[in-house]
Image 1 (tube, rainbow, N blue to C red):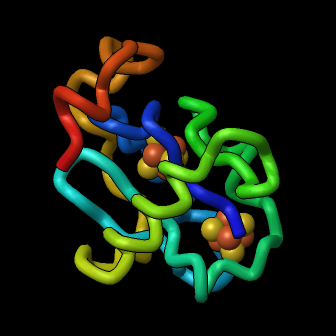
Image 2: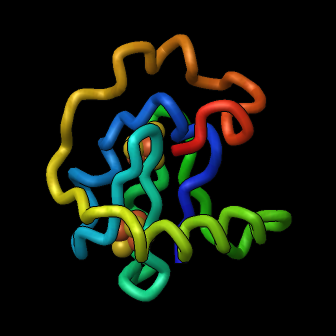
Length: 104
Ligand code: SF4
Ligand code: F3S
């Protein structure tokens, strides 16, 4: 499966949602996550994210993100259409420490 990682936070460009063939993105206030049981591992979302915030779970050191995506995909509503990026997306793109400060 693929997972969304910290750089999505406060950017939420949603280009990923536009291309996902199975609509498996779920939306929090500041971040999206992927539902691990619904993702078919097609990989098309990864290059579409301007923030490079989507990774295959086969990459090392992603355990925290695998768990976070699984947990919040069950709690947050499904998002199936692209929407405007967050107002200060460019400012937050690449910022360190977003999980601690802005996760929601
Ligand atoms: Fe959707 Fe494919 Fe990305 Fe999984 S890898 S979230 S199925 S676009
Ligand atoms: Fe987030 Fe990238 Fe999608 S910033 S909303 S994972 S396009």
